Length: 74
Picture 1 (cartoon, rainbow, N blue to C red):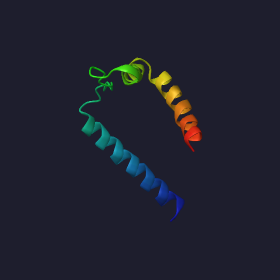
Picture 2 (picture 1 turned 45 degrees about the vertical axis):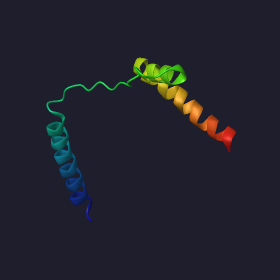
Picture 3 (picture 1 turned 120 degrees about the horizontal axis):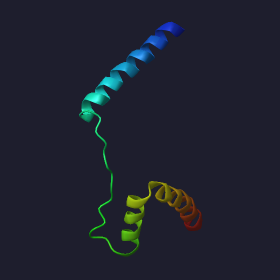
Picture 4 (picture 1 turned 90 degrees about the horizontal axis):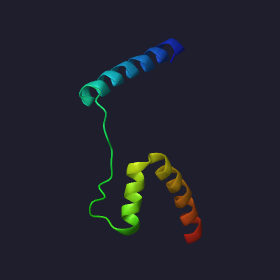
């Protein structure tokens, strides 16, 4: 496939995808994502509250804990 046709196909796909995404979003309003921690206790409540307070700290702790728990259990 020639480069010009490939580029045209990519641009058309991006253009159609952007329109669909904006139409599905209902006007581009912000979405707030939170964990429901009302019925949680102990470490599960702490984990949910960490997610609600700081996505950065939640991500860093998750990235550290998953490989370390896998290396200890394997």
